[in-house]
Amino acid sequence: MGKELSNLNTDMKNFDEELFNSLTLNQKKILKIIYMNPGIHHSDLATKCGFTITGLCNIISRMSSNSSSLFTKERAGQFKCYTLTPIASTYIEKSLSSNSKTSLHMFNEDKADYLVAETLTYLHKFQEHTNENWELEMYHILTGEKESNSSYFDLFIQMLSQLYRTNNSYLTMIYNEIENLILKEILKKYIYNKFKNYELLKPLFQLSLYNRRSAEDIIDKIFAENYQKYYPEMPDFKFTNEFLFEQYASIHHTVINMVSDVSRKKLTKREAYDYWCKKYETSNNILTYIAEKYSTLETIKKIISENN
Image 1 (tube, rainbow, N blue to C red):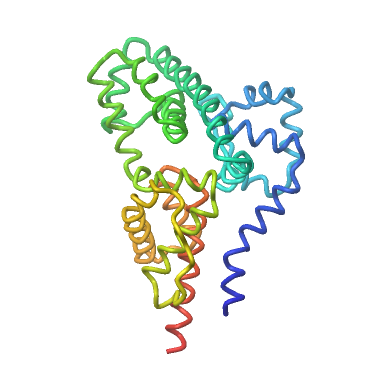
Image 2 (image 1 turned 90 degrees about the vertical axis):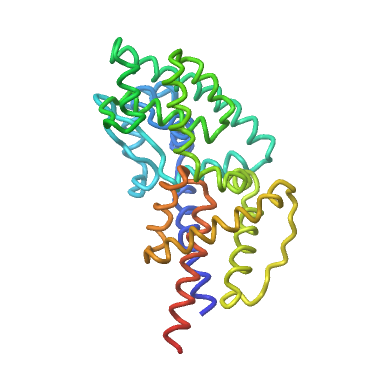
């Protein structure tokens, strides 16, 4: 039984390695640029990659049949936009952060600078597109009085969200572009509510980007402490990060609630992962690991129940 359960946890990882090892340097370059520029237009992607538009089409078409699990193509008005899937985002984050926490920090600073420029670009395009009515239009969307029908506003929020996850101290630069004080406060409240669940696990998300093994050790400890019936051996774990030690009780409480929630809903591993990505506004790789632990736990419970 142990071997079967171990296989459950490694299937997705093996698939990921095989998939990404099959990519060419140009295909990996495309993925990194999409990661840096979520929602990037086809023509802009070609320019940043140094390809012609036709050349980019040819490279993407030559990608493996599994390319649909790497990125999505959506229409935003007249534009064709690319966004990485959670699996691809995890791969890029892992490859970028494999050297050290310092290199990841430097990368995030560069990424934040770029995202500020892109966020402001889409804000200005939204303002130009709606003319003098842009403040009223934004007010109605942010307060939920109407749905957005502007691709520029949607991309503005998408970039703003990416900026929040990368370095939320840069948000001030965006807020300062809005002179209407009431609208500015409404936007701040909108972002606060959007990411209040994310903040519950933020220390864990950040740790997983530069030290995934330590983040997974924390999840192992939480499962062992809370589900002793199914995990009789407590993992040998020592905290190496004081901030996480201080936040451990909160993280423990949140993770157990996450697992109990999806267990009551009887979600599969994939359904649980998708549910958490939406709820916590991130595709951080630690959610994949929690989903694997949850799936294994449910399998053990089922086997024990059937044998009793």
